[in-house]
Image 1 (cartoon, rainbow over the protein chains, first blue to last red):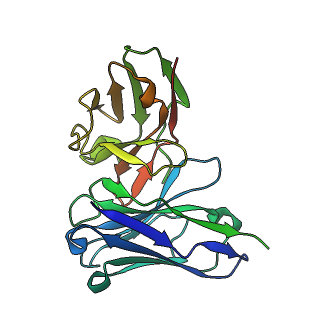
Image 2 (image 1 turned 135 degrees about the horizontal axis):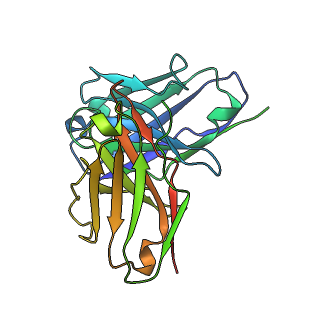
Length: 121
Length: 110
């Protein structure tokens, strides 16, 4: 059974950086595009970023473009999100999600449980 | 990247059918073959219910169906059951090669 386990969340001050990781198992990782989706407290889901199977295509929400960088290591079945210049509005539960197919065009067919990022001074 | 528009809440009695709408623009829902719907029970991971506008993943009940007309996609749940009570989100791939979600709809089974 496929499994996605996020880690790296925590409390960070505004302006600082944090790196999230997602460990994948139970499926062929490099057959799939991967994404980060977040949910702020009391709010809905927001797509953050996506990356194709070979890292050839990446995409970012306008709200994080220029501050966040998505990457993956297929040899280690891992997805990452480097978050710089964090703002209070970045505070959310961050989900790792598997894409259907190898691009970032299809829906998200498997999700982790999320890792919580708190941005506060 | 404006969020897609969903009703904040819908409700129905067990056995009834409900439809949740998701309105976007020609740059997302109207121009995309990649519209998805997710069921989210609080505290759990979201679950894919519909992908590519109308397709249902294996294991998802055939009580769930998706459709699209113009810039509006819809999720219909027939034969409502208590366990269907959850938040539902639509999402669409956009012409900017990004994804956008709807604001979410809280389904209450009366």
